[in-house]
Length: 195
Image (cartoon, rainbow, N blue to C red; front, side, top):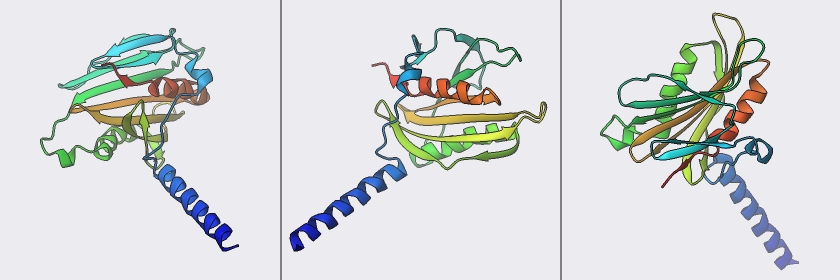
């Protein structure tokens, strides 16, 4: 009986340890939904990286600040004129002090930019995980477009690799946000280093 009790205690401790690792996200490998991944049939090579996109998405030119490379792709226009999108931003790490170049600091900057463009803005807690072996953090957010009054939803994934801050993001308006963001997030989860 004592042996069975010891085994049960060990199993419970093991289970709690596994849950603790999954809760903080450090051991979670994020992968795209298989059905949505089947809709990604075009590969985009950007800098030393690549991700897969739906073939119906077209590149859209965006100019960013010096030292940044911004690539955006948009899907077909909907009847209300909106379009789904995904944006990949790569910029050089600017601070020479490595302790200031954290994922959390980078994501905070990107989220502050999203917050400035919305009213009643809220976001989820940060989550940690990995995409194809790269450590990422992510957050989802919601806000109201001040011009149209429509509710926007979005997500931001951030990693730092080879002294580059990389953000993969998307935003979409209700009622299209679920479909648009799910497909954009599936594309984000294919991101990887090319070589």
